[in-house]
Length: 68
Image: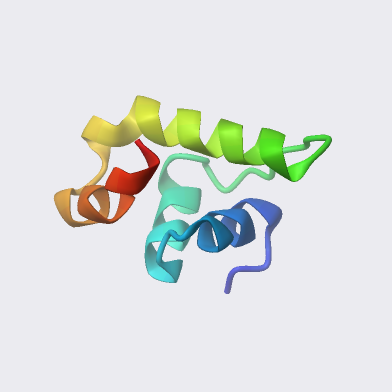
């Protein structure tokens, strides 16, 4: 499930649940991120997705276009 801060934040940002779980596993290496506030976490998530975008499967890329 989506119990971690990173996965929940991605889902709340509009990333579909299954894609958020995939991204957490694949590009965040299942590591929690320690931040002061939610805005900082969203910025980290957006930057990580932007950096890894070309390595993400096409159908997940389509779901993430609004973040890039």
